[in-house]
Image (cartoon, rainbow, N blue to C red):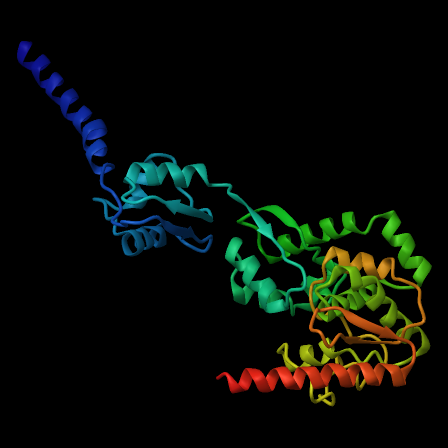
Length: 339
């Protein structure tokens, strides 16, 4: 009988060693990073993928595999997150971080006056949406149709702001979130101003995108918006340099205005098919509250202050333009001589 009890105790002790002591020592193993690192978990990963990434990126290998230990301690399904890991994190600490961040939300900061490419970079850097998924989504007419936009008008849904959003959303869920935020932005007051000006949201945001690209001086937005609305109302070509740059795909000094593109307002009358950037709230509100004046022209000041001179007379405008071009050419010569 005593021998039997001894065996039972031996088995219990052995079981305790296996269940408590062995895991304790295994989970003390740590990563090999000697500095703080960013470790990103993708929603497309399997648990095997997680094992591989931890081994390759963090230098951590456990008996039976990291994923088996993480399953045992409650992390059994890969969920996207971004972890900032201090040097030499223990396996146990890593499992706890993965569990804690299973439903991680991030602050997504959408900046104003950004291009499509910059917008894609910002979103894919924070959310678990691939660059390919973003570009395909922004071209997919059926997906965009659900949000009442198309491949040229989608920027009208994007209001620059900081959004707290789950990392795990897909493209469609992300755009649905943007549509909700856009609906909040276009409140009754802004919609009434649209009606008063006989403008659609796409038209107002398109003009705002041009205004945003014309100047970085918010104090001028109302005047610049007024110029383009005046031109639009009388059927005059907008002749906006930023639309030429958009057609070229690069921000540069405009010397050739005859680039064929539906966005080139030197060639085509009316507004471009859609916004040329994601405009700021200030630029949109400047269009809705544009300054009523008789100006049809404006030109950058020759002192390079960033401000503009506004005119209703074309001949005066030409003189202003000549002054600016002369000053610009002089500056370029000085810059070239210093190279």
